[in-house]
Length: 185
Ligand code: S3P
Image (cartoon, rainbow, N blue to C red):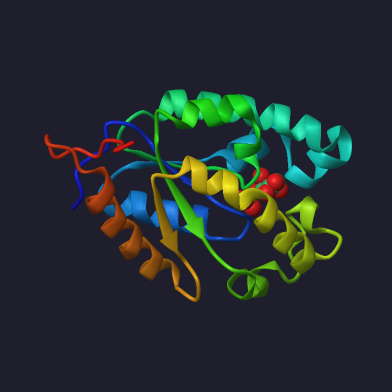
């Protein structure tokens, strides 16, 4: 059992890297609360593809930034928060993440490709999922790397393996003298 964090543990990374699955399992293993910002957005506003269709990506980003800020404020310690892949594009969100334990779930196209086929829930991937994912990976990787205090390699790894790797990273990076999980930056 890992000690409860003194701030939320936030998972970032591209679409289909397993942020929600891994985050939920990690939280349940340690008795932590789990928040999925995409799920909160959909609960309040309806399905994400419909939001994109009605308000465009910029409208979605406005809603997303607001929800992320609320969730991070509510989450506090002892919680895992999974962010949508593009949440880090918002400057205000990036500022808020400085007060969290941020972990980047790193993947490659070969790992995520089977999860993307037939996916209708991710409007950004509607025109050529593989090409778009690879482009977003190139564009966003520098942001993910700059924000994260730790990176977990998820390539060819089942969710439970990723959870174990994540726990190893947490012990390594975030343990403070008091034995709680703090941010080592
Ligand atoms: C997006 C990622 C999605 C969702 C939306 C936009 C992105 O979340 O927020 O479709 O811009 O990368 P997941 O990363 O959970 O798929």
